[in-house]
Length: 594
Image (cartoon, rainbow, N blue to C red; front, side, top):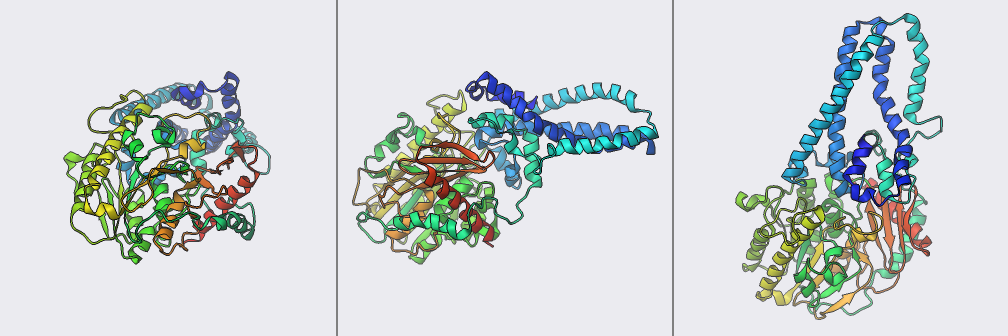
């Protein structure tokens, strides 16, 4: 039933599958369905076997309420899985627990209508299944009310069969997610995956401190990376700056995908201001995010640190405190550092991370009136950026390094004014929200140009991560999801109106900026120089249990569950090794940080 609901809920994706493939999702998924059913039945089965030893009424009450509670919990998780798949691109797993300390922030990703419909769906599914169960249970009680000693011993061997079904057979390795992956289309594989089995499997299989992505010995893996990276550490072009110590303003634009940026070949009507500004500065046309959520993007940008396939380092203060930090290095260079965000900095332990970065001034949603908040995330972008502009306009020491993270273009896309593309469908709401933020950022740049500090400033506009909206052709985790804009502007640049098509990503930003400012970049061990125009340049992005590695001409996207590439070009064999080496070494570094 859950699989059928999933296929109907994502009908637009289901229609991309052949009818036979749809049927196979049920056939291949049957093993995990049976496995989880067996685990659920194990304890009740034991009670029924030994019912002759105790009062049947006690067992009857227990079985009834055990089943009802299980139905309610699974129904809730089913509704969450249906709604979260759109944003996460994976079936339900322990990522959910990352948000439990800030449930109001997790809820903020959904609109009020989605929340109401979700609760109604939870009630209807729970009620319907409970009614079916109780109807069955009446007949069931009649059949097993009386038990014999001989039946107890006769049924014991069946217990072994139940355990066998739970582990998926007699093979050496118990059944896992890869057993149901059968198609080159990831949506079909995800549909075949039993969502509740996957959820509880990720709970019970926590990391034991070993590296599951180890393909080479560490020295070999480092050599694979360094053989390419070491040739990309120095710029082979003249400095783009006309000053040694420019002010730096970094605007992180929530969820902006290159798919809606006209100057990058995307849709033309969504970001008119950014498209216009692209002709005034340095536009990076082959730039990628390293992850798909804010709590992955910020460490990539400010620490030059790759996200992990499952874990999120920003949520682990014991590890983030040892990360290299761009703001900390800017402090050393004499910069006054600040971070602005219109929402709750407790989200994803962002506050702890920023404090570890030794940022001197932090402004968050608590400094904005509630009337200026949308109902979910925080202050509207226009209010937020006006505050940002007001504070910068005040006389202050230079040079400064200020970071602003927008939020109105985050789901559920609550903005002020007109929805240019309407509200029909998530993709149109996504487009409309970015039209709004584009106007806000355009107004800020216009304001900045009137300020005395502008002539000595570098302004960088960058998305915090890529996005699945609007829908793109090809696999869900193709580079199209991760390509984002990055634009450098300001009076501190002596080159303008140029495009750089070097392949690079967020982890390269801190390294490159510090290189331009003669700062200490040695701690940023994964970064390289964006202004090195070699064809050997590469980008590496990470998704849930998988990665993508690409160069100007080649691409290799690998799924660790299916243990096979899901997208690759003809000459991608070297990228296979590079991608696996980066994943291995970055995860090993993550494990060893304390």
